[in-house]
Amino acid sequence: MNYYSPIFLRAGDPGRPQAEREPRPLPAAGVVSTCRQNSSGRRWAGSIDPSGLHQILVEVSRQAPGLPLYVTENGCAAEDYVNPDGEVNDVERVRYLHTHLEAAARAIKDGANLAGYFVWSLLDNFEWGWGYQKRFGIVFVDFGTQRRIPKASAAFYANVVGPTRSRCCPLTGPAEPGGFSARL
Image (cartoon, rainbow, N blue to C red; front, side):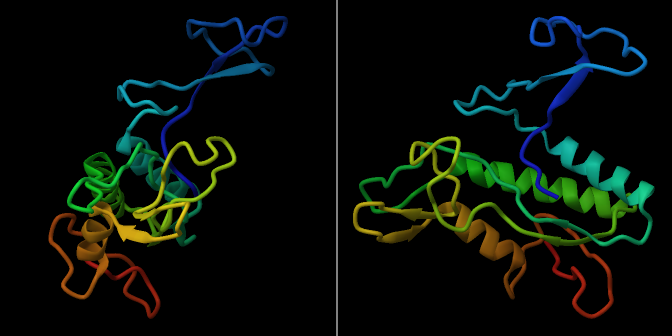
C-alpha cells in the first residue's frame, strides 16, 4: 500500500458533489466527496497524520489475517535546498519518516502483519503532479548536473534500517526468512 496522508470521505449531494463543505450522515448508496485536511501548515497538499498509517495497517490486517502487508511508498514533498556547507537538512522529512515509522511499529504491536516498508523516494525526480517543483527524495538531485547529495533524511533512514540499527522506533516483524526483522 502507499500512504502519504489521510483523505476523508463524506456524504455528497448527487446534484452538486463538489459543493459539500460540512459532513452529513451517509446516504444509502451514492455520491461521496473527498476532503483533504491540511492542518500541517505545509505548502503541499496533505496533512501529516501518521495515525492514519497505523489505522490502515491494523484494519487491513484485521480484515485479511495472515496477509503480509508492504508499505511500498511513504514520504513527503518538501522545498529542499543545498545550504552553504553543501548539505541538505530536510528536518521536516526526518520528522515525517520518524513519526510514520513509529506508527508502523505501533501497528505491528497491535497486530498488523507488516512485512516491509519502503520510503518514497530514493531520489528527487519529476513528479506527475508537481513536476520538478517539489522534492520527494532522501537524496538531493541537482537536475542540471545530476550531482547527488544524500540529505539528512538519508542518514536518518540508514541509521534506522542499517546494520547498526537505531533504537528510535523499536520494531520487529515476522520471524520467517525474508520477513521484516529490522529493528527500526
